[in-house]
Length: 373
Image (cartoon, rainbow, N blue to C red; front, side, top):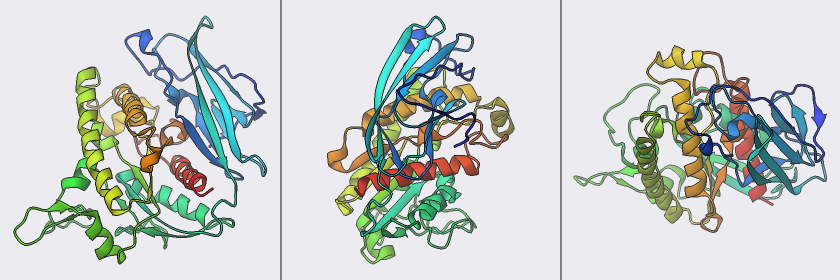
């Protein structure tokens, strides 16, 4: 997280003009997209970026007020470096106001701070699944770096993929361009291309039979039957990038298709690893620079279009995956921490820089630490 002009937030309010350009057609749609729980760990810096909470009208001023007894104000970020003894649940209230000061929406969320030593006498394994953001290995590297610090459990990462960018102990199942559906159905074992995966590692075929999703066999063949204690999944960009952003029905249909595939994959993972806790990362907010989208996609996919889709996708992820803790399924608010300017290079629309990837890694690490209490 980037810090500027740090001011303690002790039940105080923050009012900021926000980044323009997140356009919506109808002010009644303006509402906060707020996670139920935001995870943190004593001694590890993390935070929230207010502009990621909502889309905004192009020319209409809006601002936030936020009350919390923890954290620091840093420009348009709320930054937290929890101290020893601050572990526990803390309330944050977020209010969205229009230019005249009228409250348009108000939501509460829980800031859940895990002790620095949570899980220090345990031994865990984790499986990381995702698309090109995972293939880059930078946020898994951050998770590994943090897990190596004092006060953490012994750990190992399961996975068949170990790119050149991955640290020695970092393994995962992250592949560029992949979707929930591809993990369920992509099978082309004879097609090989350096640096790319053509076949889902979770699919197997017997003789002349059609390939089938088989997580049991995945764990038996690749990991000697060991199943993970934790699974993190970060998907959604490739699943939902292409519908017409001005057609709400088309967006909803594409998200419905993604959710159907997600449930198939989750059901298979839970059947094979019933005790595993699964953390589903909310699809990150994109680069706030229009130029990054022009550089990558010319005029085919404008920033405002993907931002509209991504915001609705995050809402649906929270609706569909939220409240399922008894099933071992949790949402991890990776969408709310990454800064849409400082977390991205100037010329990449959806792939973060080192700071952005680190925010994602801290989010997942903090969730794991919360689960280990």
